[in-house]
Length: 306
Image 1 (tube, rainbow, N blue to C red):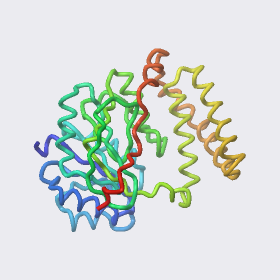
Image 2 (cartoon, rainbow, N blue to C red):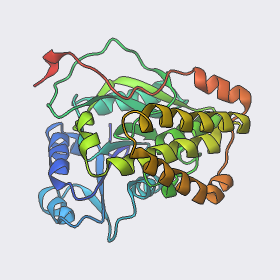
Image 3 (cartoon, rainbow, N blue to C red):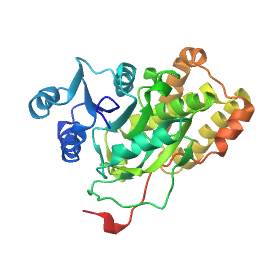
């Protein structure tokens, strides 16, 4: 494996302490010797760029003077890539197995239709050690942004991530686009990533309402962009009914304001959504829905804690 064959892409903003741990893990696993590591600083104000220059001079640093969003950063890195494959990690995610890149290359080489590799991901703060999985590589609907890899030739055949969506939904956007092109997302359990996030605490964070709003928006955006129109009407109506019934009228009455904002911005973006509409045929939609869903959470045994 040569450095020109594979790149590691990381987008960061004001989280140099998380980024430091991730880069230290890459360094300990000798990944700097086998891949080009690129960090895109999206307008940090905590001297993240200075930290990278001083502590990790081997990292290629890109920077926005003002934040333009992580989708912009990912688009830029992928569009500028000269490698065969590009691995994307969040700044708070790291490989648990040191030979991860070997399996990235092997899986891409063994399946020419594999456009994206979806990694096995553990979510949690407690640092894990490697644990084997009985699962085997297989096609799935989509992938998770914190740990995946692109075949660059495949990336060039589909639209960029839709930056006006702000966050959420870009992975499904890419997956639908790839499916339309006859390419696949391949779940690869051999590549094991830890995303150092406490999922349950996210509801207590200040940005929970915004995340909820963006989540609803991206879901409706995806339906409008890819679903056959009768199916869009059906699922759009059902999603509003279900969220009102299960969330607003039961546990989170204040979420009605969040839903109102999501609907407002969905309507505001309709012009762009109509322009980007890429509807699946009914047969394509049926085939896609039969695929296993994205494997978002892996539950390891207690024994795998370091």
